[in-house]
Length: 127
Image 1 (cartoon, rainbow, N blue to C red):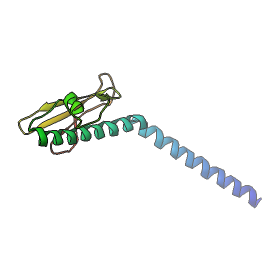
Image 2 (cartoon, rainbow, N blue to C red):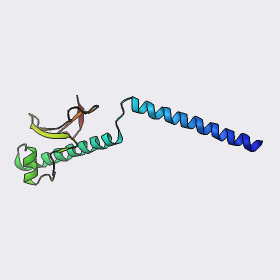
Image 3 (tube, helix red, strand yellow):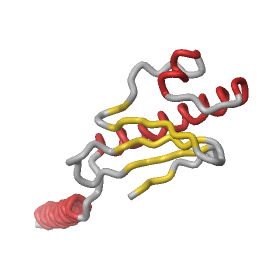
Image 4 (cartoon, rainbow, N blue to C red):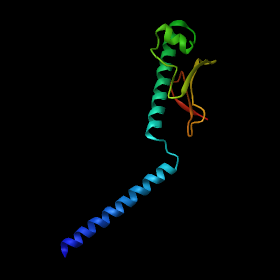
């Protein structure tokens, strides 16, 4: 009798644990949380922006001007094979303070944001 009660208690505890786990998963997905693949893509885009910005700073120090993405690659300041990642496209603009590198979000992708970095090396999300 005692063994049956122990097994029943374990089953009830397992059922409660599974119920809580299932509810937490559905709430996190319903609240618009990004999928793991989207999170990985965004981290890659941010790393690309930082690499482009660092290459731009190096180019500016040696050439006293802002370079386009193609000029950064052709000059050897950066070794990037593609001009984007997973639909994001990169763009370098000259500003009065220095430069601004922008990652443009692919159109039609839900929950997607544009990101930008400048000579401060701080990546910011844009609307």
